[in-house]
Every structure is written in C-alpha cells, then in structure tokens.
Image 1 (cartoon, rainbow, N blue to C red):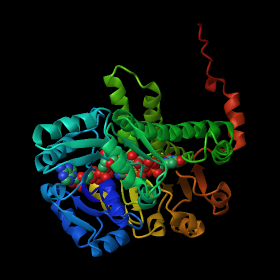
Image 2 (cartoon, helix red, strand yellow; image 1 turned 135 degrees about the horizontal axis):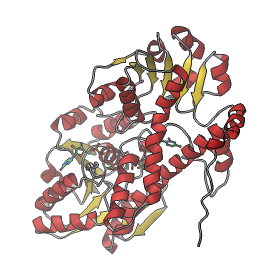
Image 3 (cartoon, protein in one colour; image 1 turned 60 degrees about the vertical axis):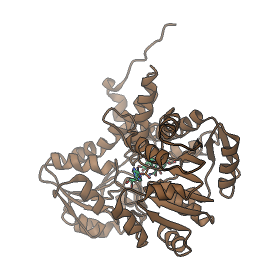
Image 4 (cartoon, rainbow, N blue to C red; image 1 turned 45 degrees about the horizontal axis):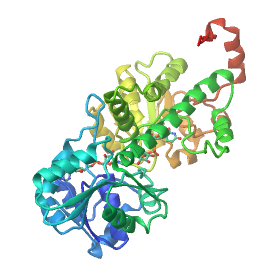
Length: 453
Ligand SMILES: NC(=O)c1ccc[n+]([C@@H]2O[C@H](COP(=O)([O-])OP(=O)(O)OC[C@H]3O[C@@H](n4cnc5c(N)ncnc54)[C@H](O)[C@@H]3O)[C@@H](O)[C@H]2O)c1
Ligand SMILES: O=c1ccn([C@@H]2O[C@H](COP(=O)(O)OP(=O)(O)O[C@H]3O[C@H](CO)[C@@H](O)[C@H](O)[C@H]3O)[C@@H](O)[C@H]2O)c(=O)[nH]1
C-alpha cells in the first residue's frame, strides 16, 4: 500500500518506518524543513533504540522517503496517517490546531478516494471534526478512522512491530477491511470499534496506567511510615493476574509527553460534559507531590539547601530516551536552583535537550556520574539508567563531600547503600523503628469519617 504519514515526531516516524519495514511505500511529511533534511541524510531527530538502522535500510530500499510537500505526499497515497502533536493548552485541554490545519491541507490535496487515519491522541469527537474540515475543502470522497497509538518511548519499535492490540475505530466496512489488512502482520488482536470509543480507549488506557503509578506511590508513602518495603509489596501484588506486575514501580512519579498531558485532557473532556473526574484529579495531584518528596527528603537530610552542591543523576523522563518533556528533573532542578543549591547534572544522552528546555546556565553538565558527584553534598538519582545500577558507589562516595543519596527510582538496595557508607532515602522503604515512633504520636492518627446513609 502507499502511505503518507503527516508529522515526524515519535509516532509518525516510528509508524512510518515500521510500515516501510513491512514492505509498504511510505512518505513521511513534516513542516519542519530542517528535520526533513536531517532525515534525508538518515540522521534521526531523537534517540530511539533501533530506529536509525531501520531508517537506513528502508531509505536505501526506497520504500521510505521524506518531504515537506504534504500535497504531493497525499496525492500519491492510498492512506493518509495523521500523527501531528496535540500538546496541552493552558486549560489542560488538547490543542487541536495542528490537527485542524493538517486536515484542511489534506482536504485541499485530495485527488481521489483516500482513507484518513488519526494516530494522534485526540479527544472524543475530534475525528468527526476532522471529517467535517476535510469535507469542506475536498472535491473527492474519503473515509476517516481512529487508530490510536500505544507505543512507549525507548521501546517504540518493538511496541509498534508487536503491539498488544490494534484498535480501529471506523463505521465503514471498506476501511475496516483495508486497515485490518494493513495491521494484520503486526498482531491478530485487532479490535474494531466505533470512532468515539477508539478515541476514548487511548485516554482511558493512559489514565489507568497513570492511576496505577500514583496508587503505588501512595502505598509507598504509607510503607515508609509503617516500616514496610514497597518493592516487596508491589511484587506480592503483581503476582495476582488481575492486578499484573507492570506499572507498579514506585518512584518520583510519571513524566513524559503523554501521561501528564493526557490525564489533564481527560479531566477537561469530562468537565466539558459536567463530569467531575475526582479520581483522576487526585492521580495528578499525587504525582505532583511525589516529585517534591526529593526536595523534602534532601532538606531533612542536609538542612538548608542554600550553597549546597547537589549531583543529579538522570534528566530524561525515563531511561532509553533523550526526551525531557514533563520530566520530574525539570521541576526538581528548578526547586533546587530556587533554594540556592549548586546543581551538577549528568545524563547519558538527555543533557542537551534539558539545557534547551530549562533555558538557564545555572546547571553544570558533567561527562559522567562520578564527575557529577565530585564535591557534592548529596546525589539525587532521578532516572534509572542501567549504568547507574552498575556504578561503583564507593568510588562515587569517595568523590563527594558527604555521602547522601536520594534514590528516586529505588535502583539500589538499602544494603548496597549502607555498605558503601551512604545516608540514604529510597522510595517506600523505612526502618521499622520509624513505625513505632509514628504510633506513639497521637497527632498522626486520623479519625475515621462515618458516612451516614
Ligand atoms: N510520543 C509518544 O510516545 C506518543 C505515543 C503515543 C501517542 N502519541 C500521540 O501522538 C501525537 C504525536 O506525538 P509525537 O510525540 O510523535 O509528536 P511531536 O509533537 O514530537 O511531533 C509532531 C510533528 O508534527 C509536525 N507537524 C505539525 N503540523 C504539521 C503539518 N500540518 N504538516 C506536517 N507536519 C506537521 C511537527 O513539525 C512535529 O515534527 C500526539 O497526539 C501524542 O499524544 C505520542
Ligand atoms: O511503574 C512505573 C512505570 C512508569 N513510570 C513512569 O511513568 C512515565 C511514563 O512511562 P512509560 O509509560 O513507560 O512511557 P511513555 O513513553 O510516556 O508511554 C506512555 O505514553 C504513551 C503516549 O501516549 C503511550 O502510547 C504508552 O502506551 C504509555 O505507556 C515515566 O516517567 C516512568 O518513569 C513509573 O513511575 N512507574
């Protein structure tokens, strides 16, 4: 099949490349001429394991091409895939301006029947709006479909080539047949729904995963106070097939370009139909507070942070990506700077993006984790890059002014930290003695609220 993919962010580029890998003829389109030039030179605009190799192979085979000319790309294709950004507006609602603009351009470009597929994450009703916009500008017939994308950064190729499921929202038999054929080599698990349900499946899935993370983080906060170990608690919960073990890793909360934006958008979407989504509002609130625990714990261990040197290990929102969008490191380092701390940061690949995003020279960027630790009063580990696990904690400690570790992702065991001489805080683990102390303080007790029916 001949495909045009509009937008070469993660979703557009990865799905375009994967469809080319399956033998389709794919043209990827972006407004950003610099990005397209890079891609033509087979340079990848962001870090994603395995992507460069697939771009090279498929470009060489001439199955994959890049252009800024949307009209030409649409005209030579049977299927047009919309994968432009849907960032947050200040209200939390999804900004649909890129989607609407692209729909207008697609409408004008149509030169015959096409299927227009939305892969961008869009609020319920958006595909119908896209259809109206295209119809206003087109003289040919077309069909629309919602095919939300579920890939994760860092494992995007694997997630796309072997997805858990493909959801196709469509009302048309012709579209169902064509898109089922397109996706059949990837999985047998193809779910056909109406368009609005497909749009909702994407938001509901992200909101549920974010809820799992905030839930386990809340349990970790209680574990710290009662002397339980969140790692063992999560393990014990995860063996229950109804719960599952994934997304139960307690830490400093979720970040990235999707969960923060999509939870806000769903809260707004619910609000627009007079539904107060209380549960999801709490998930967002818990996530915000969880980041700040790093600062609270640092202050408990060091006192005032003014003039203290803090090493930060990890800047990306998770390992195996250079993406820092909505990364906890942005908020945490921002707070450290406000409190007058001197920040020495290290990330294997995300430092350049972080520097651009934070827009200040107040951070010293280091070439290694050990270099960042030099002269530091404490280390804050914010991203669980595999190299941190392998690192010699004694060597890092020897370079520091004082051995204090805030392990925001529970990379190390308490034994590892203690034997290397660190005073430490890790999420959801505390000494049993703390529980006894808490029980003695009556002020910690919360009276049960009796609900009278
Ligand atoms: N990043 C992810 O991991 C991920 C995963 C699943 C779903 N999504 C969703 O997919 C969508 C895209 O996300 P992303 O992170 O890939 O996007 P992004 O914001 O990184 O990139 C979007 C690209 O679209 C281009 N663009 C905008 N308007 C255009 C137009 N009219 N013509 C051509 N190009 C245009 C931009 O220049 C940009 O390069 C969003 O809705 C997002 O929520 C993202
Ligand atoms: O147990 C966990 C799992 C994840 N996280 C954090 O959650 C965030 C998001 O992680 P992940 O979901 O792996 O990354 P994304 O690439 O943002 O992928 C999510 O967002 C995408 C965009 O919508 C969806 O397509 C994916 O299915 C969905 O997992 C990161 O900050 C992680 O550190 C935790 O704190 N604990």
